[in-house]
Amino acid sequence: MKVENVTDKYHCQFLCLHERRCSSVNFKIKKDDNRLHRCKLFTSAANGNILPCKEYDFYENIIACASPMGMENRKINDSQITASSTYVRQDAKPIHGPWYGRLNRKADQQGIGGWAAGRKTDGEYIQVDLGVTNVITMVSTQGRSSCSCFQWVTSYSLAYSDDGTSWKPYEGDCTKIFPGNTDKNTVVTNKLEIPIKARYIRLIVKGFNGHPTMRMELYGCMELSP
Image 1 (cartoon, helix red, strand yellow):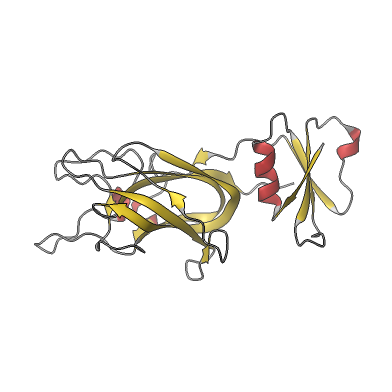
Image 2: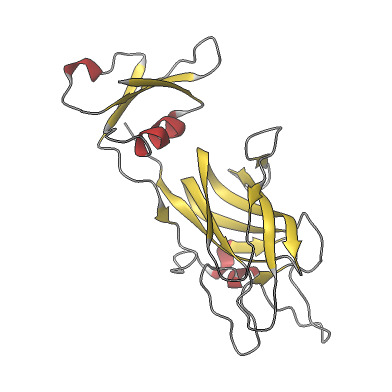
């Protein structure tokens, strides 16, 4: 048995997923004096000592919570993908909309190979509405798929929301900055040490090469129940 301090049950389950041989957990419902929950990781659900008491929730047969949420396979509809702004051509026609920001999307004949922000500035974002609350454990990004443009996001932060109105930065007051891309097509994946439980997710540009342009995918699972 291994004991860890965690922020919530999803953090506890996530640790089990990444702990070799872990098959079940006990999650203490009430916080300890350090304002964290106790998480017990077990290697076998057959051990009689791991049955929970009233203070604990018990989870077994923990499965990988790292499935694609639907950007690349289009399970997420175009209408669920929005952005702070979108690049507009000289003829005032908006192109490079956020729905083009799907991982591994190839550039079309117009060279549209990803979401492109309307402004060359940090703080632009692409936003995904997952429809219902999900647990997010990983994020993957790419730059713009085009033979002639060298555009990508070099760093980004995350924010999440339950209602699309009130937003929280990932990791609270000390916003975490994730490394982004260094070329157009290489997929860069960042694992979230503390999973996000939310319906809405934003990837916020903190640095870019050429122009804020992105293709992306979210990974996770539906909420797990004891």
